[in-house]
Image (cartoon, rainbow, N blue to C red; front, side):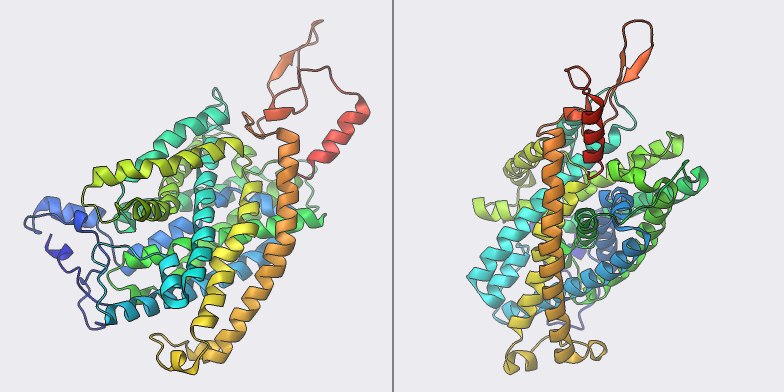
Length: 515
C-alpha cells in the first residue's frame, strides 16, 4: 500500500504530511494499487494511526469491565467519596499518561538522531526506560508492566465468565472461563495496536451503551425496599474501593504502544485527558445511579448486572460487554506478545502465522490464573494497589524527574512542560505529590485493604471456585415443605453438611458483609 510505504517518517520531521507513518510493521504492507476497493476498505477498518484512533484506543481500553465494578466501589466508599476519587484519579492518570508520552518522544527523538531505525520494531515502555535511565530502570519497568498486563488480561477473562453467566447459567463461571480463554486466544492474530481501528471504535460504542443502560435501568427500577447507603463503614472497604478507582484510571500501561502506532505521535499529549473526560461521562452517571438504587446490596454483588432484572436491554448490554472484553483482552495482551516475540527472536518476523503460533504460550498462564482467582471486583483492587500504583503512576513520575534532573537535559528537552503547570518547577512539585500520594494511599493503605479483602475471598470461596458469588440453587426439602435455598458454600453452592446452628449462620452473614 502506498500509504504504508511512508514508514521512514521521523519524529524530528514536524512538517511531515499527515500520512507519514512511523513504527509500522513490514508485514502489514501489501503490494498493489492503494486505490483499489480492497485497499481502501483495509485502510478504513484495519490500518489506523490517526489521533482519533489513539483517542478511541485510550477511551476504549480505560473503561472496559471496570464499568461494572464501580457501583461496588461506590458502596464501599459512599457517594461523595466515589465521585471525588473518580475526578481525582482521572486527572492524576491523565497527568502520568502525559509524562509517559513526553518520555517516549524524548527517547524516540534521541534514537532517531543516532540514525536508529524503528521500521520493523515496536518501542515499549521498558525500552524507553532503558534508553533514558539504564538497565536497572528497564528491569523494574519490565517486571511491573508485564505483571500488570498479565493480571489485566486475567481480569478480562474473569469478567467474560461473570457476565455471560447472567444470560446462560446452565454452565458455571469456571466452565465459561475455559470457553472464553479459547476465544480470547485468537487475539494472537492481531499484529499491533495499529490494527485496532474498528475494534477500538466498536468497543467504545459498546461501553457507552452499557454505561447508559446501567444508569437508565437503575433510575427506572427505583430504589429497592429498605435501601441503605451506609458507606463508608470500614477502612478496609474504603481503601479497597479507592484502589479499584485507581485501577480504573490506570489503563495507560499501553500508552507507548498506542503512540508508536500513530502517524504523528507528537499529537498524543492531550489525547488521554480528552479520553478520560469522555470516560467520566460514562462512569459517574452509571455508578451513582446503580448505587442510589441498590445501596448496600452492592457490597455482596461486585458485578452491577447481577442486581438488574433480566430484560432484552440487559442481555444486549451483557453481549456488548463480552465483545468489548475480548477487545480489551487484546489491548492488555498485545504488549506481552511483543515482549515474548523479542525474547524468542520473532519480533521482526514477516510471517503473521509464525508470530501468532509463538504468541500462544502467553495465553496459557493467563487462562490458568483466571481459573484460580475468579474474584470479580476484589482482584481489580489488588491489581490496582500492588501493580498499577507503580506501573503507571510512581515509575513514570520518578522517571520524568530523574531524566530531566540536570539543567542540560531540561534545556535540550524535546517537549518542555507547558506554562500552565508552572514549567519545570511546577512539574517537579506535581510529580513529587503523585509519588507520595500513590505510595502512601494507593500502595500502602490500598495494598493493605485490597489484600485483606482478597484473602477473605479465598477463605470464603476457596481457590478454583466453580461459580464465584453465584446464587445457590434451591434444594428440595423432604416432608413436602417445598424448596429452600441454602447459604453460600465454597464456589457459591450449598455446603454438603447439615445446616449450621443459628449463631454460626449469623457469624457467616456478618463475615460476608466484608466481601
